[in-house]
Image 1 (cartoon, helix red, strand yellow):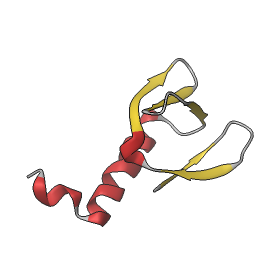
Image 2 (cartoon, one colour; image 1 turned 45 degrees about the horizontal axis):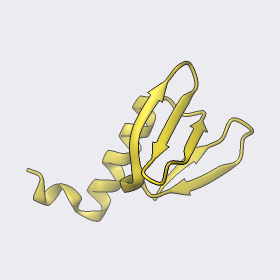
Image 3 (cartoon, helix red, strand yellow; image 1 turned 60 degrees about the horizontal axis):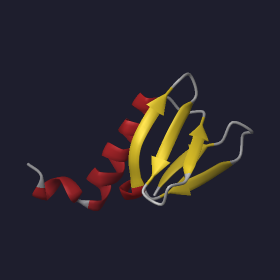
Image 4 (cartoon, helix red, strand yellow; image 1 turned 180 degrees about the vertical axis):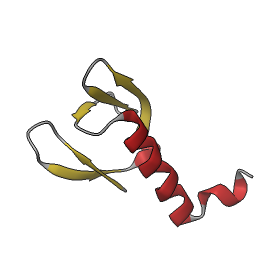
Length: 65
């Protein structure tokens, strides 16, 4: 799970494997596989960095090298 922050400051954790796409216009919107759209404070780069760290932590990159 990765931590994200809503525009109102509430923090919560999401499963990064459920993110279908990321949009920045200007707010960052995470489009989830469920069809839900989450608007967050983090930049696209921050989200991507958190996903990479999460995948390293769970060993996901072992199969991708």
